[in-house]
Image (cartoon, rainbow, N blue to C red; front, side):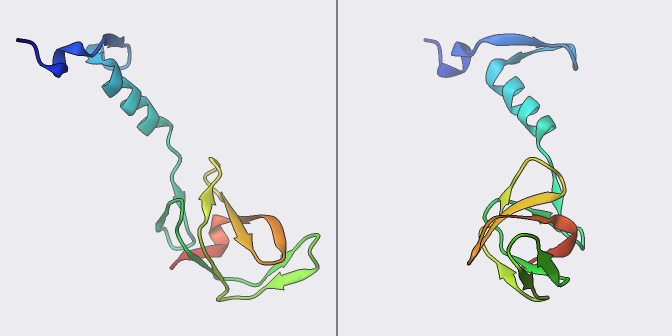
Length: 104
């Protein structure tokens, strides 16, 4: 009797020259395309992390300054290695550069 392991379709991976299960090849390609976002001290950031500002930042269009030590909760990665999408009260569409934050 066959197990479920034999049901996966095999595809040729040109990079390695091997035949791999399609699911494994897809996982490898996703890992290769993943963008690493690091904060001002080199910590790896992920969706949902909380960060603290390391510098006073003037927010263009909002007429507001975010002060050092301000906590930003639940960040989202944008796909750019230096930009993070944030929510902060009174400011819509806030995007910060990773070099100005530190992981909490």
